[in-house]
Length: 408
Image (tube, one colour):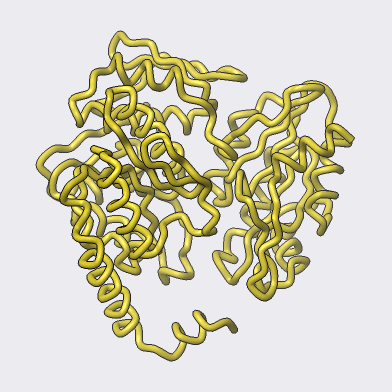
């Protein structure tokens, strides 16, 4: 048991909560309440947050605003950006408030932040004045940490309760009614199936781009998959909420590039290889469905650290449903036995190969692939580390490994 786990076990929950709140108060005081001098957009939900942060930033910049953003893959202030190597989507209170202050000092008018349920639980969002908050979608994740789905949803709702100005909500999500019930000065809804305020029609998903219409405007984006249409709609909704025209949003999306490690096509010849961060059942199924017309060779695992063990056989079952060949491998075992995690994932399907070494697993998948097949490698995306026993981090990049093995 590590130090953090020991603290959580022996210190009462209310004291831990007060401790986190106190840190947030000290941090905002230390950095002089920076969010009062910049418009902050918060993006929360189970999946799609990183992509929505990136696309929203592109739209704001296209409109002429100097913008900062913070996500699981990068930090950006104006033209300067650097990789997020914290293995933490939402930084701690001091880093977060310091980032906002730096953005203000660099003359940024907007900051777009990825907001997690764990961050909300630990009051990292407190003392930040949000101009607008976006809800992408909700499916079971971090259930053990939050002690149930209801608490997980309540954590997300907490962000909306703190945002009094603008709420932007995915109306197609079955949990949208809970977010719609929270009062705000303005509300924007987006979707594909429901009668949302911002609705995509005439959708076409191609191998290397997607097309859709809003009103009479035709949008083209290099992002693929229906779920990325939702991500684009969320970002467009932010733009419209800030009086940015559809035309400007359209130009920004056309200029945008695929997000690293998010449905990223690493190679197209002699077959397609896709790397994606998907690590929840819903996200994984969305990726598989995007390529359902191809034969799929799938490499997957499940992160350890005692988190969300319930989903492991579910991930295996989904692979069994959609994939021609399945290889279950190591991902981020932390202090768990990696082979035990692999076996728990394998309970969902009888057709899986088990290969502990992730490089060997990727190599095997590439060997199995024929022209027109799609190799899908999920779980890590663009993460630069693999987290193993004793708090060690091993440098890792699925995309780089794919390129090396194809060259070999």
